[in-house]
Amino acid sequence: MNSAEFLVRCLENEGIEYCFGLPGEENLEFLKALTSSSIKTIITRDERGASFMANAYGRLTGKAGVCFSTLGPGATNLVTGIADAQLDFAPLVAITAQASSSRRHKESHQYIDVLSMLRAITKWNVRIDKPEIINEAVRKVFKIAEMEKPGPTHIEFPEDIADMDVQDIPINRLEYLYPVCSDERIKEASRLINNSQLPIIIAGHGIIRSKACDALKDFAEKAGIAVVTTFMGMGAIPADHDLFISNIGLQARDYVQCGIDIADLIIAIGYDPVEFSPKWWDNQKKIIHIDTTPAEIDKNYQALEITGDMVLNMRAITYLINNKKDFSYFEKLKKDVLSDLEAKMLYKTDSGLSPLSILQAIRSVLKRDDMLISDVGAHKIWIGRSYPAYEPNTVIISNGFASMGFALPSAITAKLLYPEKNILAVVGDGGFMMTIGELETARRFNLAFTVVLFNDNGYGLIQWKQQNRYKKDFFVGLTNPDFVRLAESFGWKGYLVDREDELIPTLKSAINGGVPCIVECKVDYSVNRRLSERLGSIICRI
View 1 (cartoon, one colour):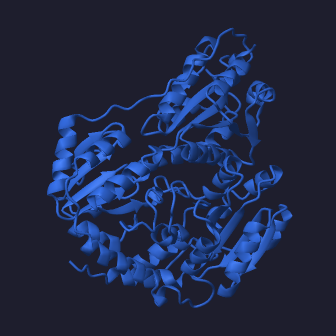
View 2 (view 1 turned 135 degrees about the vertical axis):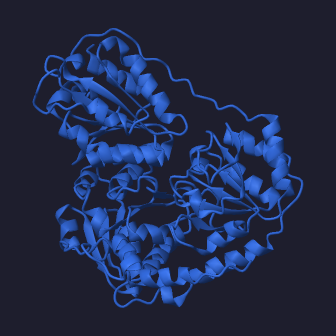
View 3 (view 1 turned 45 degrees about the vertical axis):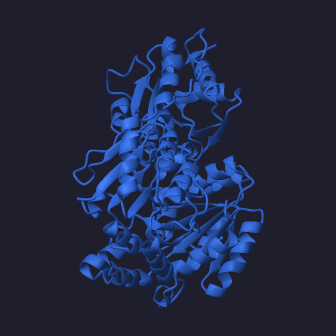
């Protein structure tokens, strides 16, 4: 067999279900090998879409998603999705073709040093410079990509190597086991928790990555400790659990911040500082860091570190808990949070729909285990702050790299993986247009899911920030196509909603119709200013 065929055999050995990418001249042998493989090849309209699809696969399964491209411009188009995987901690393997060794030493068509370019945004990358290293290289990129904290790795596969003969076998996968923390650290953490009066748990995406949600719930329930989650940690504990307070991540004072202010101990579990900087906390707080990996160095995050297998470590700490905390203050705080979500001022708009009205309608028509995937924009802030998640991996948000254009390609992956679930992507008009070509990809593979478009004819999040800082906005206005007709031109069904009483019936029709649908909602973000004013007047009842 040739090297491209052997590379594909190694991918099969890793259990790869899908490869996402675009064809090119320099990856012809790789593409030909895929035609005889059990791996399903998803050809996308742009490499950025492919990298987001692989990124989402990694987040949803814990196994590295695979994207591929040709050399040069194909590889550069992968960059955004790879970088997103780096800061959102999604396991991903990118395979880029490259010029043959006979022309890499000189000025040559489409040749750039892709290896150096991607080194800055991957955990590890390698060029296959001879066929004999393929099996080792493949095993290594997957092992590194999937180890905590997970992220992207990269293989460069030159065209002359792809056609060379090789006789070898893949290297078998061996799952990596994380150690248990020392008894001394476990006892010290338990002592701090038992002696605290008002501890609070901040649960991040690491909880979900480590499949430690049940251990978190058992720990919180035995100790009676309030729980807040980051945006990417939404669903780590159900939003209707008695101990859940709210989500944290808004870079402004919010009600949930009052809980952190009063807490005498912060227990950060699976928390990634890339989502919400510890600078927003009082840096004199005692902190326990529970994660698979050591804590980030941060002057505001000096913690007792409990590292290793998160489930086993939390179980060990839970066993040593000897008292239950007084939850009365956090009960009042939770009522403040729920009362805020019902504030009439956050629903009143100058024209069009309020973001909260749209999100409440979405929540009412989706089942607990259905999936909402958020793009990046003003709508993401409202989702992170206000949308209840009841199970892990039912709200997917890019909140580390926070890249626009993420949601539509990710919804394609989600529907491939979970055809029985309702998948709903929430996008703004800005981010939607960045990967809109993937509407055709979804239609080509007969994937029926719903896109809810918050259309404000502009970059709403930046407008919000400009208005907060300068009391005016600039360079954020956009003109848009007729999205209903655009949807129809791609073979999707399109709806336009501009009245609140139309929301639930339209969403039900879209979700239950069995065809891909776009529901365009005319959103009025004038409520953003009122939310900022409301947050600025918060007084904690301490």
